[in-house]
Length: 301
Image (cartoon, rainbow, N blue to C red; front, side):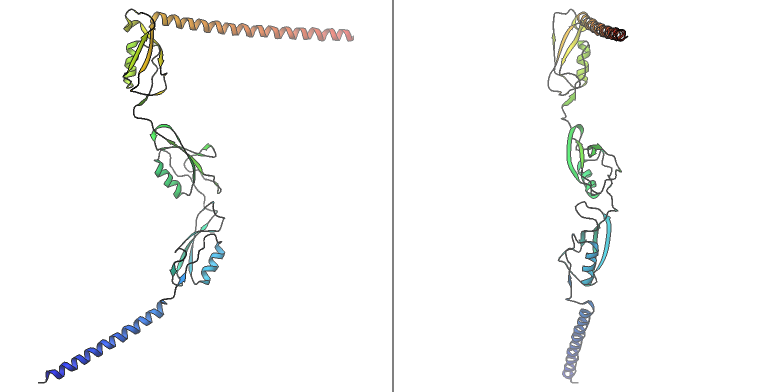
């Protein structure tokens, strides 16, 4: 049997099959190019700032479709102008491609989201997503560091849900700047005994306490009273700095209080007498005026 003859026939048939497959592939690719318009594309134009009707006209001329979004309002654009679009300007797309265009719409109104007690970064992101601009951030003394405490618009406090006008000016955020961890509020210890004052101050973490007597006092733990302190109560003060106390005897402090009360009563009495004196003078003037008018009347008669 002549195997070489069959081998040659097999090789010829194999090569013919490859050639036929190649031609079929070429024809298929050519048909796909024609069907999909391969190599045919459109350059997306820049539509920013154009009105909606003009943008639609441009897209139609280029053979492009469009989808319209009217959910945003931007004060930097006029009503019915294009704010953004996708795909971007300069992109190559096929004819018939849909272009997503966002139109500046008067029907969209910004609403203040709930940002009170929110961390500053989160609040600003929520505002940005709501298209609300922040024109100023003010920091105040408050233990809630970097937390939104209040929102001002046109110098008035506004709350969650406030609807802004279309030409909004921007808001002001009031944010806590925190306080140092060693700073505390100084309590009022005036009038207390020394032991009570020291207990009260130490309870507020003030441990450095200096005190002075204005005169010798017998049994100061019982008889001494604070009549002056530095710093004054209500001040935020470093707990590591000293508190100064001045003490006097209970009897002298009571005497001073009585003296103050007496002076206050005298002052009130003086004011009362002054008012009475002014009232008398006023009545005297009225009386003189009546007499004068009476004399003039008699003289006319």
